[in-house]
Image (tube, rainbow over all chains, first blue to last red; front, side):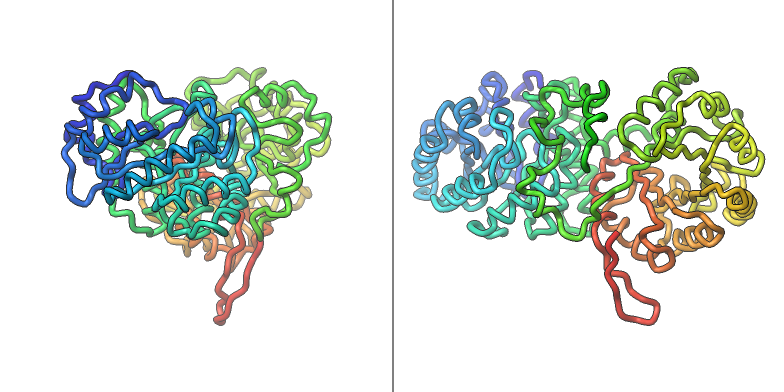
Length: 277
Length: 281
């Protein structure tokens, strides 16, 4: 993804995305391009915060947290991993060290009545370690939930999961964290995202992360897709008669806008099918 | 993915699949660890037959006309993957489908591996006889659940097409040649929009009744979602047993795998006289 001008990031149509969550921080672990997110303060201050929309930001440590609050953030996220190697390579510390940092952040956040969300990456596999046990995912999730994160987003960071491994992992995590406090964050690197999300829905999860146009590739698989496309997700949920409150056409407009800005073809099949008509 | 024979694992095309970023080690890409296998999604079938339609349905929609020798090599490579059914070509007029103009050469040119079936499309008796003369040992007929699509696609109404297919399937059965029936537009039509599950059931029942051993239900324009797939299958499975059904999902809107997963899962079917029963595909 090329450098997106700050002006683009907080312009009107880009903001008109989801009712529930608008991610203005990069949510793909390991792919953080310092240059891309360097304008975090400007963007946070520049956007129009619509009523009924929440605008969480990633805060890896206390310093980031204080800057976020100073810039107007009212919700934050911390980003852990279920893999030691991934944790070390991605945020330069062990899982235990990261949890200690997050405890500080989440404690400060709670002190200021700022909700904190916890992410666990590599829940269905790690690019360095390979298989990740559901027990490890449960351990990390429980820790984040215990320190006060209101929701834990379980990420299939490199998209290697399938309905079988998704089910096994969720069965384990749900013994320690209630489904109402869980979300899934599926990457579509191997085309499995919607099938995995459907499986999670059938198990009682009702919060799903997605990215408009399927933005964000995979740093571990050149040319492969990354996040599941919001448009494709909404299409499936609409077809199931499930209420999201989100207007798919407006999302497609925002997707078209950002793809043009970064000179990229959309990864959303729904958008591809619609714009080809 | 089931047990992959060693011979397949060593073949070049399989090895090319297992590039660095794919999950290999000792297990097959995507598969659970042996220790985890007992926790597969419950109610799923133990074996799934994959019918490869790339050489026909796939190439048919490609703009570039693929040379005959490339088609033959493509099918020969597929024959070595472990696939048990590969749809080779379509014995349709080259005026309608130029990509399939070399149907006879392709059928005669491929190597028919033991244990692999090679069905071909035969829209009418003429096509059927040509197919048999070229060495075909399995055929398919292609109907639709939409009148408009039937007229635009094969130039006749659903009823007229069924009459043609009756002739083809009857001749096929006479020669002990299995016949598969396709129903297109089962989850939506590019001309008519929504298609009722009842219409799909009607056409499927007709094809099954005339002797097709299997009915492939197609989401031709990929508009279906797990909800509409479930409704349609619940209707069709009242008249055609799941063991005689297949799904053919297009991925136009990225929904295919989710729709297929839905089709693989057990379904509760309502009986005509009230009450229900569960079918496992």
